[in-house]
Image (cartoon, rainbow, N blue to C red; front, side, top):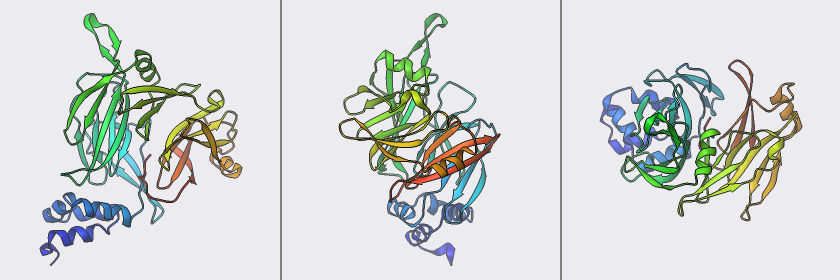
Length: 340
């Protein structure tokens, strides 16, 4: 009976399955695989409404082909093999149910997208200009017209490129990849100073807020560089307490740019928000008891990572080898994409 159900009815049933059950259903037969892979956009949206997003964590220094998924409904972790990937990768950004990644063992940029549950993997086309260590950012535009996935663009800024006679030079241009065109194009020039700083202090993540794509340099004292997509203009923002923060990360909260940081010496961990005047205001402090639990007796936030989760911010700190202690601070009610 199940193999003869109408396509739209079966797709609607699949929309109520959590991600792990849906992945198992895909392996039942070719008909179910086609239905689960090609479900209409309305069904994909239903999946988001019916289920909390799963939290995804990938090792930053391990070259093992695996990742970890947290099921919020069962409150348990799952280890998933990434052996289907042709090489070890590290995450760049979540794109709905997909992960944008780059090679872990190479500074030359080659981007790919994958889904750890369905074990799908695909390289994006080669960039128009080969680059090493550029900054990468993602902008999600909404549902795609002819696909169950999202319409997104990937922006690549700065980086180094080989020059004549073997010398290397900074690349003062921005390239953009459009998922519907499946191609790269040059979006425009950028100030050489920004290209140098984004290359030397390559940021780990980007945040898109109100038409601007932001990166934060990985060097202390921290600073933020923004690319206004519509006008192709660049801007620089200061970071609150920039010279006193041991770690800092960007996030988007309620549509606005936010910054999470921990003060030197195991001081307060705080969340700031950027208002319409481009002024930072303190939004919240992490409770002292939670901060002590996360630090575990250490007096440093230096090993802290921060990720945006389903309506919250997740702070993780490495305590030994590959063991992590995590804490969550809920910042608002609503839907969101788990990431790590």
